Amino acid sequence: MRQICTALIIPARLSHPIRVEQIDNSLATRQALVEGNVGAITSKDWHVYLNDEADFIPLPLNARAEVLVREAGLHLEETLSGTAVFLGHGSNGDDADAPAHLIRLAERLFDTELAA
Image 1: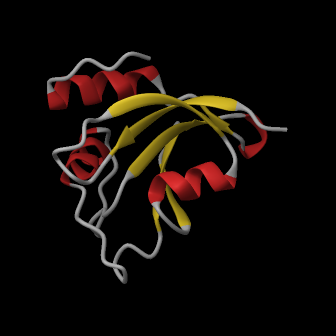
Image 2: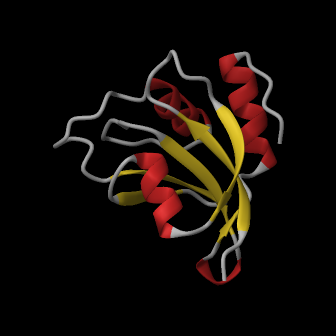
């Protein structure tokens, strides 16, 4: 059964706006958003989906997603590339809406209003 979730989507290209969007939680939707195979990085109440082949394609670096991840308290050794799709943790390992605190942090960091 497909579930609709509110995702925080941060494109790698600075010319493309950060947005909050309703998406279904299907693998096909996640693959379309990240433009390929899906990998995830997990934090305590959120996770971010990225293209897991970004280094080999190559996809552009995603500096905004790196800043958000770092400011949200997760310190990574690797760089993030391609479109980043942030969602929350639901029950039974399902996706849930991106946490409101993460959306508010993105709004403050990137001086933008995101309708949730």
